[in-house]
Image 1 (cartoon, rainbow, N blue to C red):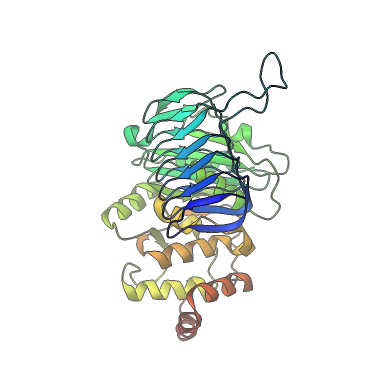
Image 2: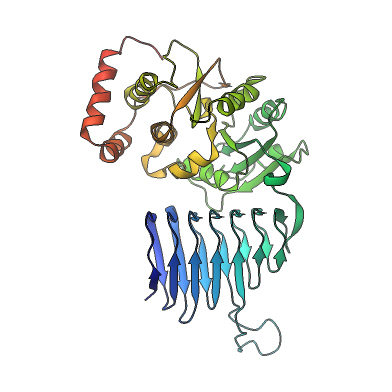
Length: 399
């Protein structure tokens, strides 16, 4: 059984984490393991040490195998379904029954390891670097490197030296017929420097050509390993794990971004550092940057008939990460639930006009019981019923 040699405050575990082996696990403060979408596996053999620094985040489906030493530095993120191992289970040449001696894996501070990346023995990722999705790393890389490919090589510099303002995440869950139009509306925006992550969860995985057809190097494409029927939250979280911008927008694959909208929303967040998200205001609403406006917006999101609204907001990346991204367990209310949790933890700033228009019908819906039950358990009966009464007094106000 694993030996927990250093217990820290604020450790958060959501979902199943499999702990195996008889080695040593050292936890820093506020380590977060998000295994809601898939179990996390930590296997530390006798004599091995796994050290997780302060504010480390490990995504769903990640696996870390330790024979000698794996160190993950402070504020680093280990992406969904990534694999880290410091030893080979058999020799690659000669006597394959012989087990080679293990090496080490070092991930320095402020590193982003993308989904499905593989860190092999002797991998050493320098401070502030980003390992792209699917990369296979087996050697040392300097600080602030953007690392990708098989075998991995330096592909550029990270946002800490090159600068990415806004990460746009597009989860394709149907046939992606309108994807190219959605991408062009985002990529034609002026002002913020963009990157776009397309996560293909369509049944046939047929969105690749539409995603990469224009040859824009700002667009990356990932295909979900398993089709998540009716669980759009899972591909959205996979895109979030790869985000490098200061801000994030979840763009529907059938949406069109209003010209100039990204510049307006990013500017609003930069001018209001206490705000964690923007709200596109298309009807009368109190200033949601005030306490009164925040309470009104919470009551409307929780009990009103507004449509799911994450596409109508731009978020601070750090706020999304603290919130843990979408919660797949609340089903079709995952968008609304995420906006509620980010708003509740911080505040919002209103921006006039639509952020995104949809080419399809807009579905208005009431929140489901799972989301309401989760909010009541998290925030308590007093807040829950106070917001319900407030919404009852304000039913005449349209969204």
